[in-house]
Amino acid sequence: MIQREALDILKTGVNVFITGPAGSGKTHVVNQYIAYLREHGVPTGITASTGIAATHMGGMTIHSWSGIGVKDDLTEHDLESIFDKAGLRKRMQETKVLIIDEVSMLHHFRLDLIDQVMKHVRKSDKPFGGVQVVLCGDFFQLPPVSRYGDRETHFIYRSKAWHDGKFTVCYLSENYRQVDDISLTILNEIRSGEVSDEAREHLRSRHNVRSELVDDEGLPMVESTRLYTHNADVDVINENALSKVNSPEFIYEMRSTGRKPLVDGLKKSCLAPETLRLRKGARVMCVKNNFDKGYVNGTLGVVVSCGPGLDPTIITAPSREHPQGERIMIEQASWRIEDEGRVIAEINQYPLRLAWAITVHKSQGMSLDAIEVDLSRSFEPGMGYVALSRVRTLAGLTILGINEAALQVHPEVLKYDRNLRTLSDKAQSVLSGTDAVEIARSQNEFLAQAAPMHKMGKKGDEEFTGYRSGKTSTFDITAKLLLQKKSLKEIATARGIVVETVIDHIERLIADETISQSDIAYLKHEISAKHFKKIETAMEEVSLAQTGDSEGKPPLLSPVKSKVGASVSFKDIRLARVLLGYVK
Image 1: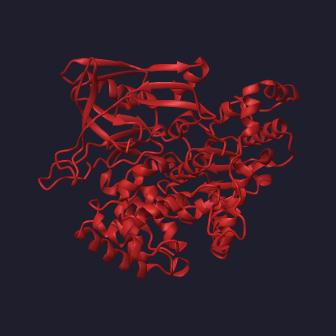
Image 2: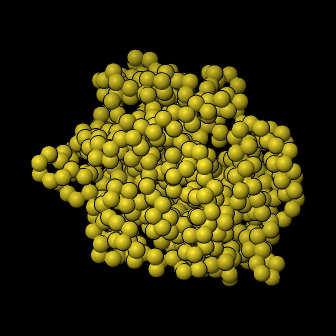
Image 3: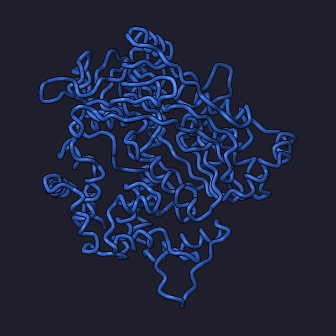
């Protein structure tokens, strides 16, 4: 299933499980849905199973949001105690959509507790009290943590709430991180539970071999990030490396506001340290997305200036687009917890951390060009898969050590994954077999129920083609700007969204025949002629290679990316795909 199809299903208001391989854009789809819900004023609970994942989305842990904390079960007294807390009660009673990210690490019994408390607070016997629940995660990644003496732990699909919730499965099929076929093959074989001799040989070929990402003069384009399974290894490497940098050290302290328990939770989960120690020449990693400034979570660089009253400036690793690296001034960022649009806790710090080494756990969600990874002490299923899926190409991988456990995934997940794929295929078939007008009607009905100010479109007013809420739909606004021949950047700025979301809108508008290919032909100039030709040729080849279930569908992005190379962005490939008429 592609991202646009998953978004269409989400907007109908059914319970949904968004899953797929690492790098398939699961969180991206959820963030698009969050933006859509906010635009229409739908009260939304944004949560995750861990604090780190929650801060990525601007939310809080599901444990805090629901009031269950770390409890393994809830008594009647516990339920009444939660109900008596006015803030918790109001939040749960008003919420129309609840999002929970990184559910692979959520204990099955805690999903049942969330269901139980929401039914109690909302005074409803419907699953989760009648709220739309969106779960997001990949069961091949790190599982729930269980300590000795704890209650028996399973993945959430073993819970009663999962069964009762009747979740529609959206298994995303495209990969936006890995760009070579060998890397994808290895990761897919790990997911299948059968790592071939050929894949093992490819991995052995990367043992203690430095990154092959070099410039025309043979110099390294990117300095590798080291990944380790244990915190102690990471701390020792970073501290030793910083002490060897021959320049004055400056300290940047984190600032915070809000209730202490919430602030403490943000501090614990934030990847930026409370005390950031920097020196000119220090190796750092950005730990937050800032597309306008030109960096994302995982961008690596070297500090070129810092000091009292100065924002740190880094120079990123050289690339084909920036052969000398790109100079970026890093401004303070905020991590916050919001409730009903009000900030109730916030921390401020420069979004940087020392990056000679990081842990595998903290690398989740990052996309890196080059890594050195020590998996010789891997200790839980999925750890090797998470680490190896961080790097975009095999050429950027150096293996310092590896054990057999690193190539293993949870055996139960192997079996259940086939079931998830089947359920996703069924959901995709139902969607493709449903008239576009009927889909839009279902989405409109959900908005009418979920958004207090939303009004249903009435038959007879005009032809029903989408959302009617007393204002123009988000897609119609984009369509008008396209008809005015605005650039992608101009549209994104005017709409307060990113360019990638504009392209999502274009795909939808073309598919719904709201606009035509001739209306967007002017956007071809946004891609260099050389790159457009490369993409066109690659798409023809990939389209011809797609057979079976994929036949007749738009060419998948990753195979195209592997053909056109690193100099062509995914954004340009997606735009070219719709310009070439491949979107159905």
